[in-house]
Length: 376
Image (cartoon, rainbow, N blue to C red; front, side, top):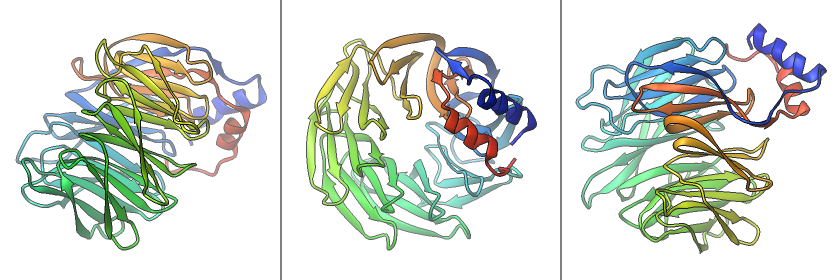
């Protein structure tokens, strides 16, 4: 942990605490190309952004905001819809560019890049990592009616195993406690469950065009966003039984606060909104918030962040909404430890760094102060 970061934390712990009532734009960091996705490693205070069309990742230092470009090499096609995943324990970053059949493995200490091949003829479209098992899961999208697959990568030796899934898989989520991987197959209207111990699979039927999914780590319920049926399918992680909850029109983004057991589903356009699902009763409330693809949840402060060209913030306690004026906001990453937001702006090729909202709890600040040295 940097000295400046420790001093700031100490002031907050032994002073009156650090309270921010609304987002404040701290800095806009220009990038060379169009950012597609953003992720962060809270242990090292480094932020990573994948850009199109030049197949590169930019590393941003969370303390100095200095940006370093990491080339992913020369690829057959230009990057399109990139995705990132980070193992904070090993300090490795995993990137897919949405079009090429490989996974880029970045050493967070040296920025050295290793490419791991995925099935030829497929697009490495989404990625997730289970830090408990040091295993990476790459979703391989195939156009048409051909089934897709998931490449399972051993994080130690980068050996791979291919697991068949449904047609046109788009997203992946992991229940770390049960070591179960869930893959949304958009053109099969199914979710594939992969047993992380032996890679065996099970298929569960859901609604029309499942595009995204998320897991409540406390209840082990899986929430699948069905874009074309304007609903969410709820999968019981233990029994695999399903139920359905109606949402706003054409949902496409989801975030979960497992502490409050509330689920936030975003829908695009002026006729959309955000549907709030009570995880205890499945009762819903629709809020008048225009949403794009991204919903992020700060569970500690109970704040929900929605990108919609600008940035909308929902107070989880009251459902009060306020908006932060940003230009072309798209992807978002929330550093719960430093209470900072990183919001990409695709058209202007930049990243906005904002202070977060709400109070940083004293217990969290104390944990940061006494935590052992991290990987910086």
